[in-house]
Image 1 (cartoon, helix red, strand yellow):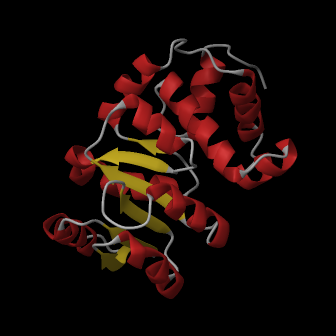
Image 2 (spheres, helix red, strand yellow):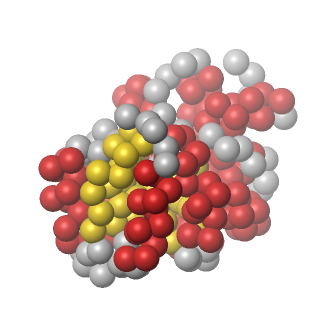
Length: 205
């Protein structure tokens, strides 16, 4: 059973999310809140696998919330739900270590697969955002040295945690680089990113 906590200041949207997961046998929305200041308490109480969070709701800054979750609840994956698709903002938030970023307009088509993806330590970015973000990156299909290095580790079966340990970086940084890989390679997760990188001869195992 995947346990989910959702934070959004639009009650109607929260009720829609609740209805969506009520119809899925192995996913459970265990708690909801309309103010970010309540979120950490809900995480402590309910021990969710995934947190859905509106990046523009009132309360503690989104940066502080993500840092606190990363520090105190590293097993929890954070998926942003938002109406904002500005590339600079998306890139800034992904750099904080989000496991995924999904537009509200896509939520009811993509939310289930997004939650399942991030719960399995994958990255997830809304399909409609990928092209926007690909245009934001100057060199499409050109990975940085670090991105290629991380994908090599992933191709050899390493988890995000073990990659972070091998490269002496944080899991947050690993997730950010993997998000960039997915965007640049038009991939829907790290496994798909590895397959596309190999098919493009970006690196060899």
